[in-house]
Length: 296
Image (cartoon, rainbow, N blue to C red; front, side, top):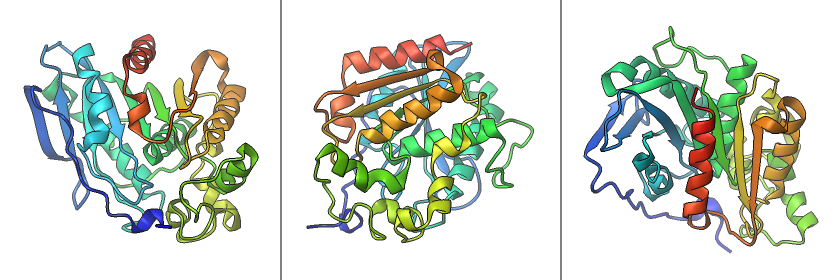
């Protein structure tokens, strides 16, 4: 059986035809993997709320403005600007490097808000799969005053965002294999839980259950405080890449800290891992409602 990290994914670009205002390959910091693409709605507003969309790929694959951005681009017509940044993959730089990079993206957006008619007080993170994990750790560590670095620029601006939408993410990596066992499900990748799994590679080619300190550093719940921002969580019960219990557990942990009014959980029956099962009007309406509710 093919390992996750042995696959050769094909890059399929996002569907950006018809988007009149595209600003591509903007540098949010110096160096490789530190560019972003910015898409603005065709109907201009004085200030657009902003979605920073973080792609998944096990932190081993992925690049900006791929087809995984299509869900976020659906929200352009609802008035939201969309930012698609690159970040360092797990074999390029150790965790938490991507967190430092994404915080630099947030500050870049705030620093350039006037130039692109963005609202610096209405910035949201949205991520799928490992991108959901990165979104959650970025927001939670910021509100907890943790994972601070000197990377990037624009330090007169904060890393704070207004909310997070996180879909089918891996959060407590050491529990993935046992959770599949609890659910009676066979994971898609036989190496789940091993040092050469995508989650093991993320932690330095180590079994997550053998490096619990590193595992905790990558777990958003480590950083939960009562300052954590409102969060909308999605997962599907048919997911064989990341057990949906990851999302259920994270929602429970977050609710215990910030209250049920700020945490929304959507578990979709029989929906598998990946964007396809979440590309529908009901999901876009839910996301829009959440974003507008917390745009203040």
